[in-house]
Length: 83
Image (cartoon, rainbow, N blue to C red; front, side, top):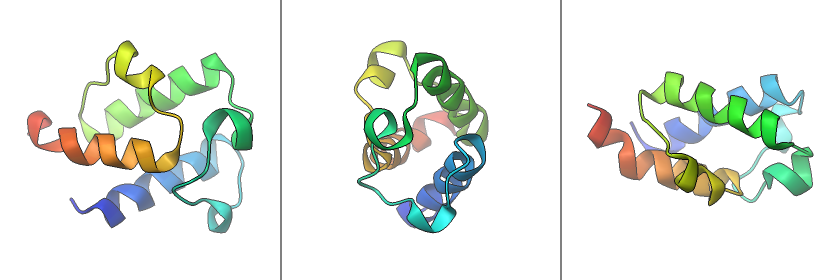
């Protein structure tokens, strides 16, 4: 899966979960600052990512993910481990 495909899937999840305009989502979007995501929102988002991409994201790694771009890079780097 390409980074563009990963971004599109993540953007769709964010648009749905955070009721955000899909066109406003970009790689610089910050979960806490731009989406007002609290810790519960973020944990649920990470669980949905794990289900969608078949990858396990440790709590330690999840804490380091602040922007959409960081999530895309993380999924891209770890997608081969899930296969």
